[in-house]
Amino acid sequence: MLQAAGERVPLESDLDDDLDNETSNSTDTTAAEARRGKDIQGIPWSRLQFTRERYREQRLQQYKNYENLNQPHDDLEKECKTPSKGGTFYEFRNNTRSVKATYVHFQLRNLVWATSKHDVYLMHDFAVMHWSPLTRRSSEVLNVRGPVIPPSEAVPLGRVQISTMCVKNNLLVAGGFQGEMVCKFLDRPGVAYCSKVTHDDNAITNAVEIYKSASGATHIMSSNNDAAVRVFDCENFAVLSKFDFNWPVNHTSVSPDGKQVIVVGDNADGILADSQTGKTIGKLIGHLDYSFASAWHPDGHIFATGNQDTMCRLWDARMLGKSFAVLKGRIGAIRSIRFTSDGRFMAIAEQADFVHIFDTQQDYNQCQEIDIFGEIAGISFSPDTEALFVAVSDRTYGSLLEFNRSHANTYRSASCESDRHFP
Image 1 (cartoon, rainbow, N blue to C red):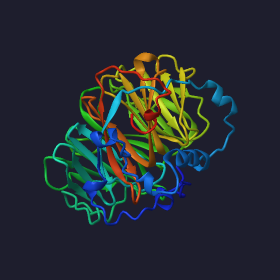
Image 2 (cartoon, rainbow, N blue to C red; image 1 turned 120 degrees about the vertical axis):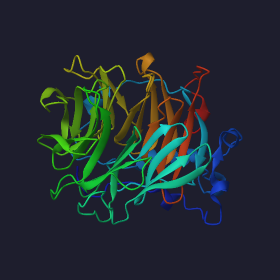
Image 3 (cartoon, one colour; image 1 turned 180 degrees about the vertical axis):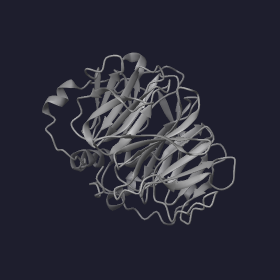
Image 4 (cartoon, rainbow, N blue to C red; image 1 turned 90 degrees about the vertical axis):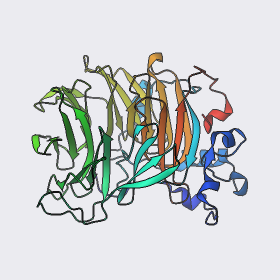
């Protein structure tokens, strides 16, 4: 993963509309307000010099997707599915600017985690915040502005720039821009662990995952820019194993049974490896650029990878010769992928503006496209599948959007105009 700044088109420069005197409540949006015509992000199109449709067209034409390898996509386009976009799997519920997500590195966008439909964690500056959609209140859970004091006599960390995070099983793990890892149990004061997992000059912690190992123990896996993957015990945070690769590792995902792990990074080809030994089971060949996202379907056979070539590829672990489906983004790299816990839906987030939800039971041929504006800091389904949260990072329009699962089994025509901005 390169540390250079990425190309982007900031909203604030285009949609600057002097909202300084507006309160956060007035700029929040409810489902009822959206049905009456209010923009779900609270963007006042009637006060701007262009329409939403015109600005969308402009973004599609001008947004510059960052790629490291710049290979031609001509043949790749032919592989892509063309799903119908009329799905209404998740309906807009609320958008709040009371809590805003930020990100440190433009390629790392796994900074939102929902542990229930009433508990969402996201990164803001040098802190991890908790947001309750039920009480409409936010609170600070972890502050790493520095120094971060370890529980033992270990050396404290200075200010930590949080590059990635994960929250699961009452444990919060945050990775840092200088190779740090900070762990905190949500029901205990202070931090349980804080240290640099690597002192390499190129040390960014690109991803962290909390998972159940094959033995049933809870482990943490970190993916770092020093081309290594490390596994930690959650009891004493000791390093259990370290796997070295030939390129910086940007993301890993452990299979539901804890036996296999997807490894993707600064290489066009990914790897499916044994999670116990790190030994390669098979190569994932097909992407054209570097990958930053991966996820397993709960069935333990199907998994997905997301790449800067704007593609999401679907694989079957039993037949790794070729991906069985290719799904294309609209304007940018696929930075985050999530499956619902029941396996019914898969959501993929582009770097900006678009989140796509696919019905896995329809062979990924039916899709809901969430069309918004802004850089996406992360997405997360609630464990009960009832909620989807999307965090937009922007100086003016940064917010957290909530969508609730629709149980009407409706499927509107893809020509329905309102699908474009109000799913």
